[in-house]
Image (tube, rainbow, N blue to C red; front, side):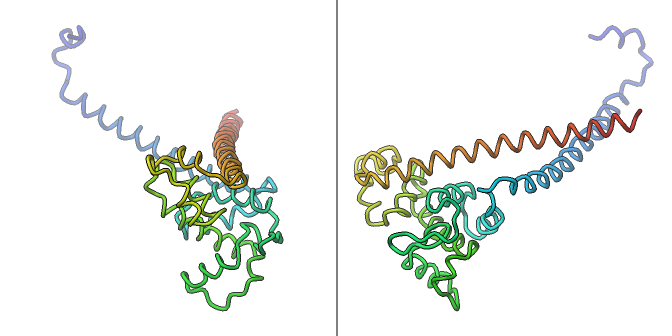
Length: 232
């Protein structure tokens, strides 16, 4: 027992928990307000910082499309990096067009499924349109393989080589295993395609986390300096 409680029996002990409770609520409210304000400020700084590098030139389009289709924006960026190196005017050997190298067949599939009107193939050179079409195709592939332990290699194989080939590479003994699937791919170009995109995707994830931390530190360091200078 605390000796102070026995030394001062007349102290109104019943009020002390109430004060602590009120104080705790006030402190919690302050912390929550700081987190909200900091989160808003951080989001603003982060969005501004995203456009500083050339390979982030299309991040605004990607962010919009990622809300339309359930897909990781950083994965879309990694696919664009591999498909066109961020060149919206790129044309492939099989007449693939634009940032995500969308084929005419894939584009037509997107147009019919999403009921897109007045579409012509040259619109695939428009970055936003191309990202919409490519992300639709990639998102649908990810949905088809969502029951696997890692849907990304399966979806990338389908995006690169077609669904029929991807189905052939599924391991009969371990159909849910991405590792077994990757080992069964007998197209060296597709295997390399998957490896490169997954490595780039991980690189983008790490870079994003690093930038978020740096911007957070920058923001709060600036706030601290402003506060200290105001108190002088």
